[in-house]
Amino acid sequence: MKPFKPLKMNRKALGTVLAFGLALPTAPYVWAESVAGSAVTQATYAPQGVLKTVYGTVVIPAMNIPPVVQAVYKVTDAVYRSDASLLAIGSSHTLALDSDGAVWAWGNNGFGELGDGTASLRETPGRITALGRVVQIAAGNHSLALKDDGTVWSWGYNSNGQLGDGSTEKRSTPVQVGALQGIVQVAVGFTHSLALKSDGTVWAWGTNEHGETGTADSSDKLAPAQIPGLNGVISVRAGGWYSMALKGDGTVWAWGLNKDGELGDGTTISRQTPVQVKGLTDVAAVSSGLTHSLALRKDGTVWSWGGNRYGQLGDGTNADKLIPGQVSAIKDAASIAAGSEHSLALLADGSVWSWGANGYGQLGHGDTTTNRSAPLRVEGVQAKQIAAGWGASGFLDAGGVARLWGLNNNGKLGKPVKTVMTAKPEAVAGLPAIVPKKQ
Image 1 (cartoon, rainbow, N blue to C red):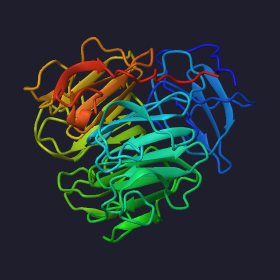
Image 2: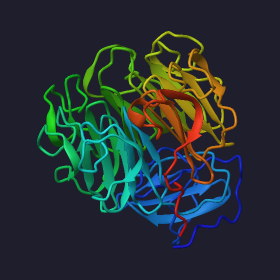
Image 3: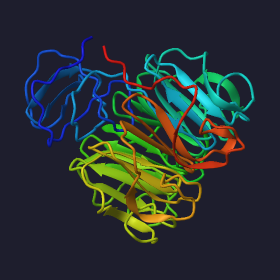
């Protein structure tokens, strides 16, 4: 497969990035397969999985793919097919996916989070050999991997059935999640998991004390269960104890714990079934933190709601917000990432901006003393992808070098555990270049 070569690119135009089986965080990469097609002004979905779209003056032909896609905007360079790799920063371990579909892991391993069959902590990346070709990863207190055959595999902590294998036993090597097939995206919360099928349905398992699984009850799920009535979904995200879904019509739906307004429905009432986030339309991507939420609209603006104790909503205050409000300082955004109590935005020009909690240096400004309630640019950074986790942040540069900063608990930054934290981005030693594979 050769890269798709644009005839002409309108650098100010918006576009929809398609990812077949990748379901990655927003990034300026495309999985594009050239076949006969015609121009349309908006992405259109059909039951057979045909999608047509336009990048400004560039027509991307119809694609014979499942109807679930990941939206990305502000593409400014050549668009090409990509097995786009990414970073996933968990509570105390980190995963990376290279261009060959191999998963690398480092950090804490007390519950088997590294998937290597041991319980030994690792300060440098090691390859998980028990997995085949993987197209997406997710990390929290446990780990998930989506393979290229549409199956889901899990390992690590399993107190509430979040591994989805029918048990509550921790696993130090990957096990298959139930009978799930045709999955295109996975997401990890504190102790629950989500999977999105190619037909637009959402499946959930793990803890359900606050309604995290969206199944209208409060019983933990040891195996995947379909969320009733939730259809037409194109992306899912799992927060601390809540979940979000982005539908193809640009609306956002949420369920689970709502003590800080993280569901965005104007209340603090927890929900056992999905409710629509108020006032949001034309959304391209969402991201979930511990108790706060972010949304990226198609016009490049960023919106936030939920917990705001550390300024993670970026609105210049520390007041919780029960409905979405615009992060006015951010324009022309291409990607967003919500960490535990901080937030990141990647702009179309490659710059990265951060705000929120900074007690571990996770904002990347060189200090660990000043929380920020308004976005501030991370100096010296040009990124292709961003990631945020528990007290830590990361990005991939144009050369595929992964750089992390913030809390280094159990070596999750790829540094000796004696290094408690780093306040500026530093490269992860021993990790191969994480770059999209051009074909």
